Image (cartoon, rainbow over all chains, first blue to last red; front, side, top):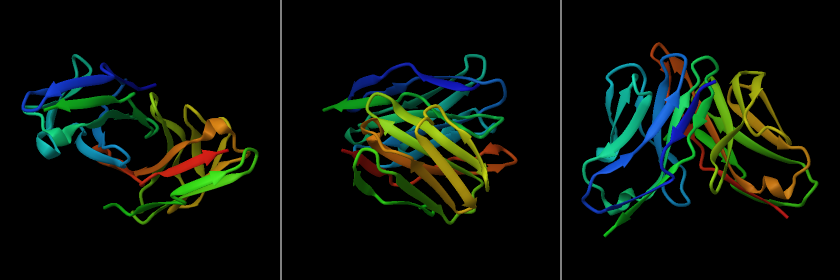
Length: 113
Length: 115
């Protein structure tokens, strides 16, 4: 069965500094991977997705993620944090056999002025 | 925005009563999902569907049942609501193409309180 682990439950950065949110996955096959963001009391919004095309994926609002098969990782980065980036971030993998979407536990990003 | 709506958006119900939540899509997507979101647990899959009348359990399926009699509707039923089922419930839809599974689109959520 596929699974996803977000390595940090909480990340705190200062505004203008880089953001790194870490995600590792387990998968027997080539996975489909996604990052979603959820602002307080809001729904979930897709940031970016990897579906076996380019390994460096660009998303909205300046976020990027790199698929590294050898490390089974899909870490999310942004060069410069903005106050509006403060939110909950979820790494998600699609089970190749069943289509189930498996969520990580989430990482809360705090951005300090 | 993807055509996915959940109803009701808010509900308060009493322990022991049955409750049905509805998810409706206009995208003709094959896959539909029900999740619950609780603090500290992220989103946990309750049930999902991979086609009309084709459903399977997720990781927290006890106390829940689902039905999908047509492509556009996926119903989640709490047979006898308990306080532990107080949560925010999200429906999602996705599909599959030659590249793999597409991104999921989520409904706005249903806040259910069991008193």
